[in-house]
Length: 153
Image (cartoon, rainbow, N blue to C red):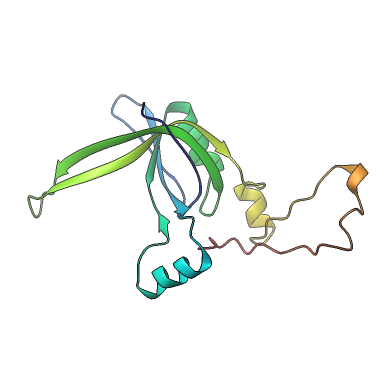
């Protein structure tokens, strides 16, 4: 079985292109934080070892066009798909380059704002709940944190 489910944030805006047969293909890279204890993370960072993985995601067709339209750098999304490996010859060096990609079967947008809202709000993403029953419930215990749009790792 070849099945993968990932949740991460885009490292840059998605790239949309079309094949010769006019099939849309969108690619983007997700930042996936490795689950580590604080001590292990600090040790890895001190030794210049990675604390995150950055797989390339490929989304085909209408779903790819939508991903290109609604996702942007910093967006959080969930990808359900499969791993695809391949290789090619580097034209300059002649070396074989091996690739590992995630081919998406579905993409779910988890960020609570669109690119236009993000631009209008100066880069802040704020959640405004609409459950009137709980209004005031958390007022004394929690303070709102402003999101500056940066990837947290």
